[in-house]
Length: 411
Image 1 (cartoon, one colour):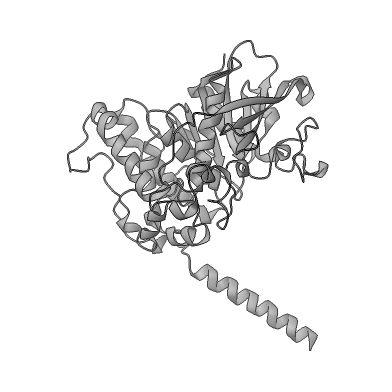
Image 2 (image 1 turned 60 degrees about the vertical axis):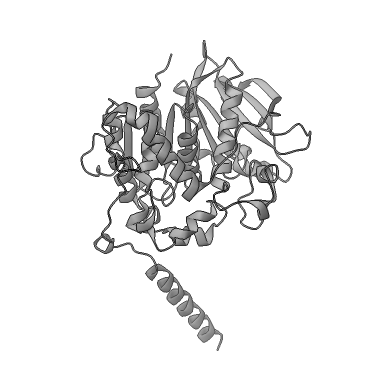
């Protein structure tokens, strides 16, 4: 009887899994026919024929559409913003780096909302260095096995370095760049039940007063990245005009929106960001707008729900988000085993953003078709699809550093 129950449970599990998978399309031949919104056309139908028309009119229109219909409207820099260096070490990572920890306070309250940034600076730097800045999922101590990183309440020694493969701190420092990271939960809990009652949202109004175009968590996390950049503007060790913002998965969506909202970011990197990030929504391949809004209703503004199962009605698509970076360099990366994030849709977004880069007099994406696996294509727009699954690997970081060398340069 026991073995029958086990077999029954396994069959139910398999059937449930198959039912779930059947809800989502992974067949390229079943991608619906779609027509992308015109990127180089004003809302009134006037063609955008030169850089001035894009810079002075069209970019603002596209940005406004994303604010009102997808990510929501974020506030500006708080007047009470302040920075507190909580730890400063002259030697880290075997002597190749200097470590610093900074608490960025969002209000004047000592125990009010704040975020803790871990910063590694190249020890041999002779002047301001370019930097990579990104949010992490599991806390700053997981970024490196470095015993000098302060543990948070509840952290364990065994947590150190659990996500080090995703950050490659030694590689970044060896290439002459600074590396800065913040736990995204410091800014806003990634919790659909508590996201708008804790973190930065509680400073700007309770959940029951958030309007349909009010900012969601992705916008909040991106806002936090801008506050880190505010700090870089106050110190001499970082060249704040050469900062790359980077993110993976939901934090890749965040890095893209942060780069769109804040043009101070000199370079933008999206790693496996998928639906609501780099992938075209209209393809409805893998994760869909309805699925993401159902599973993570706190990520976007409420207006985005209007497009559940109605991607064709969206006034924007993600190639327009990529184009908001122009003429700044932007890199989109996919993984061959990450069909949920729609690698082809990520490539197509990058390619369909190409005309804006060309209009502004820069090279767009050189690849005329989706590049082979593990063969990056790098113009002013970069793209690669890597062997493997949903993750950040050393291969990705090498490509990002090569791309940064090309566009930011090292001194």
